[in-house]
View (cartoon, each protein chain N blue to C red):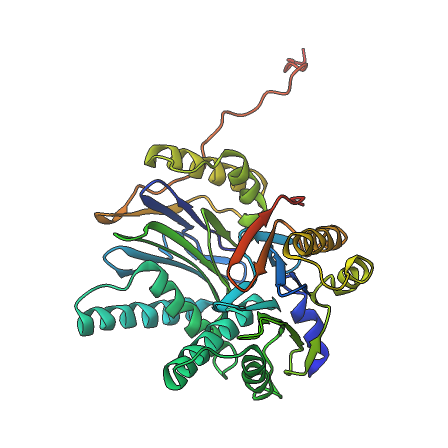
Length: 213
Length: 211
């Protein structure tokens, strides 16, 4: 029931995740952040099995930090994503597989901004935009229509708002708040939470309310 | 336990086909990365991996395992070339891959592979296909694998001829792939072809139906 969205722009990656933390039919927390900072310019959004998301995300984050401490420099986005993928794939056939779907967005000086999509089986692909969850059925077509290469931050936020509006319109689960972050050369920036645009109540054309006298 | 094999091999979709010509070999794959059969995640996912100047590996099946196997085989080839100080021959590489796959006999990698290359010195074409357990078949004409295996066989059998030169081989292989994947919901969304000749390797992307 979770939804993660990632959009790669000119020199940044915009990432958003719904902020509902739920179990079964209960929404336990409505301002939950599903994005984990792996390093200064690496952000990972994770959704899936409850404890697995946090455990796996923290495990990867700590290992990325360890690399930094040992070697004195950060792993590139591609390397960090490959490392994460290999861990997911190795754990898949162990007695403790992690059921997490990920989006990894990062910026490095050699490759610029990159977005990697990874599913719980450990398949990874670099994408211009990626979506996880049931929301993907609604959002991917919106992205196909309106996404273009080298978007500015404002354009990307407009696109993201369109996606959130579509999810609100047609997805049966109420995801009415999304945490939004941008990764770029300067680091990770927390943006304002995005909510679906409220529309005024529709008036059915051709009918008028009548007072019964 | 291996009743799931067919389901898992079709989870992501994909197709790879290779053909032998006169002193050349060509390998082609589709570009689809699908998820749970109904969703297409990416149309920029070629399934061909270069492991040497005249040695290519094409893999279909579960994409996670495609990535793991290709990375592991790259590691084995690198180590071989560092130790032996020479390039790995195609049939030796095929044995390495077969061994690696059989090592997981009771929990296999869900990949079906095609090794395509030119023998060193003679530049004779070498084509081999391997199943999920590493069972190897060396072919003289063509090798096919993927969710549209049957369709690919149907296209390759009448189109292939002996001693095709590289240009004609490219045309024949491209048509075989494009028409076969158009009859399969899980493959397609682009195509990439690689022609391996003694002096060069040419990678081309084909204009394909994007559905």
